[in-house]
Length: 282
Image 1: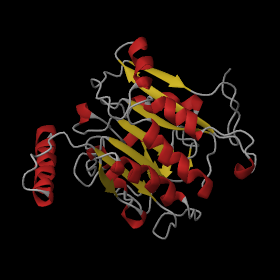
Image 2 (image 1 turned 180 degrees about the vertical axis):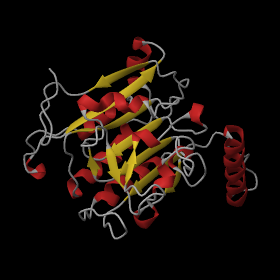
Image 3 (image 1 turned 90 degrees about the horizontal axis):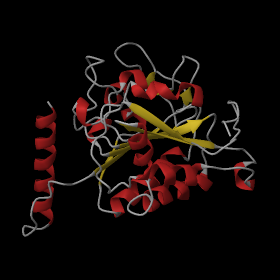
Image 4 (image 1 turned 180 degrees about the horizontal axis):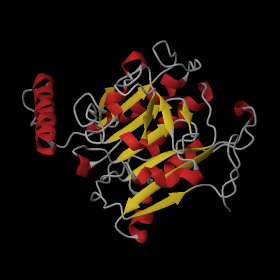
């Protein structure tokens, strides 16, 4: 299945290149940046309206496109659970296909998030075939070893990496290098749009993706944030503890070897104290 998916992606890239310029050679190394966002939940699953969420995610994706990455997006009513689930663990999962999130080398999901079930749940638009309204790490298998491509997964979602639940992401780690999210609540608004754009710029070649996420998403006592504290978290995976720590330095264009997830290394800002979560360790 992995070979089929990769061959298909190469053919699409070569076809697009021929349309643009017959003299260009097919680019088998094209990289994909995919985002999914909902602002108004009008389907079977409910959620409070957040007008700027798609702008935040789009700013990241467009900047990735400016850097030469192929853009993929499935927004609003297209945010259906099968795109964010693997087969297995869900027979209806299609995340490794061209319609799914694991088709991308880097992905960003912008969804209302909860943690009361013992792990992160992100609210999708309609119920999935199991009758659930949630994407979840339990349904995901991200990366090369699961038949996908994902190296970096970003979660613009509350409690997406709650410190006490961070090891849940071992379930999804099948070659994914870094997963980023938030401990406690995060916020949505026009003032955050540039930060997602800056993430794509800074982490492309010069700064590790995990480190750039921590730098750009952290807020304490900013007036435009209504003096709310936001606590970004990043986890990296590796065959050894040292490798899991080192992978926080990988850039989007780094192309490090796909890690075996024996170890997880977590990065956060010492003592960060958000709404809906205890202060992070010092």
